[in-house]
Length: 122
Image 1 (cartoon, rainbow, N blue to C red):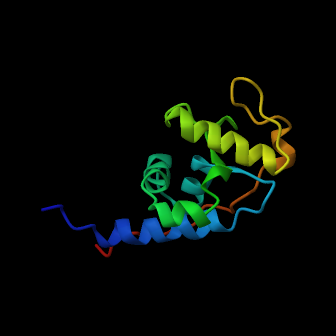
Image 2: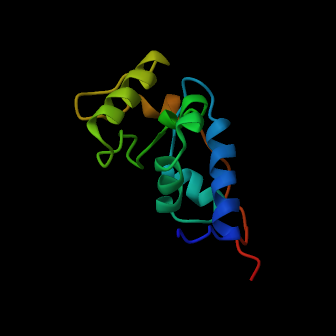
């Protein structure tokens, strides 16, 4: 029997999804930018995004979240990397052969300043 999700994880997941949904077309942000804003680590953000349901993946612009160096993550399967590249290019971004978004300052979406959030009730 799987372990139930903690209240903190449920709250973090909901906030990651909310923030990703706010990234405008033609812009991108990073796992780390979302994490700093939320006062969590980037791995939390990446975990939430990597575990989206098929229904969530179909409507959420997950492809607009990349590594801290404005690069498509090298840790995802090749078919997802190709899909992310395709979607980003369709939104007007140029990506080089190594997966880096070109002219990244123009396309970067600022999530916001660090928030002092306590995710657990403890």
